[in-house]
Length: 253
Image (cartoon, rainbow, N blue to C red):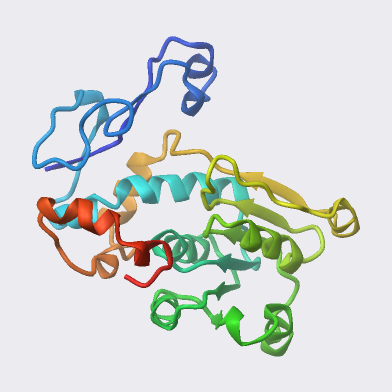
């Protein structure tokens, strides 16, 4: 009973030897650069597997890889006790970030999410407040909630408009994490004066260097709820239809 870290490092290049293996020049991505994902069975190198507890379901274990990516992102954010963390987007990644921010000691975790169902889920998983950005200015909603200075903003949508919103909602000396993945050609327009005036730090996060075992430990220990994120189980034959559904990108399924 195992789960798989899909990113196999060469262990020989300059990045691997310098403990920056996620930039490995010969990385093999199981299911991305080689076959192995979305199959009933696949063979992977033993170096890429992690044992899971008998009390962890396979559905929960499948969430270890996205959780490991979130762990790298939350590490880079350096969330500290008493921080006020704003998470933009409450899809699966945003819900994981909310829980990790709470575990890291954040005094308040505030979510920005237009989908009512996702907002309710965020509240169940520990968000202190959820803002619907379609019903007014999120900055005004923050003021009405009485939130102190937002010290960390984690953008989990991957759209230019929400990335710009992250900069706008960040407080003085805040860290803004662009975690959501955009299309490669996307660009954003940021006013440098806004960065200067608030002395912001912009960060990004790439895959999951050395965090998979920590993710497994959190899931095995029931410290992170991934079970509630599984909405249904679909047969493999339905996968092309599911991925082609435009409602996925709109967050409606």
